[in-house]
Image (tube, rainbow, N blue to C red; front, side, top):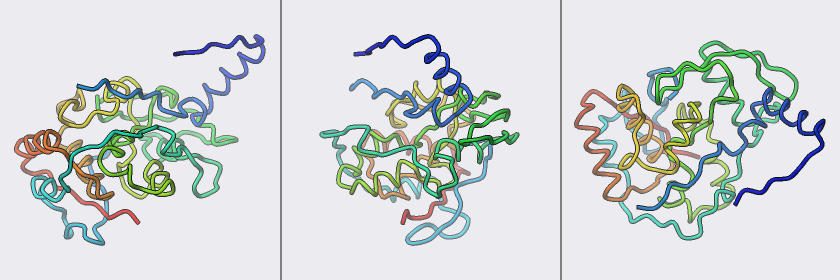
Length: 245
């Protein structure tokens, strides 16, 4: 249930102004609802291979999918607040959301006080839409928080869930995309949602698989079947990943 409060006009205008210019305030929770029951502009693959990861050059997508552990998903007990985000891990004044925006901008924004970003250009790879205002972008967890919980994160410590929710160590564990596509995706896996831009499907399958392998998250039968179908349509796609610390 939405609750409304009435603020003095001056206060309301101040809050609106701050949210519009500071991406750390404008999209604190990504506004992503849980789905009902029933990459970045670069085409490069996530970097690195270590600690059980694939050899240099990456694994063929089909082989990488086969390495994802199989298990039945478990949603019991999930709360979005179980994954603390966004945080300022390096103490530079920029929370994770802003760090992703700075990293993925095709034209870098200017960085002001409290890491407020102005200017800048981004390409939302889910729908191939160019965006010129940071506030119109959401930061998508490639494998959504609820899906991560279902797939094994329910058994993690709070510290590991925080690390997952703010993972800047992988190329596209977090991606800046249009709010419309992020909220359309919600917490769905590739069995029930793919990016609207068909040209993004192979990269999306690679990014999803890399994230699952990086964090040793499970896949259920429907998810695996959808990924295998994508792999058949993406014979030249490879997956690189580095195991999460």
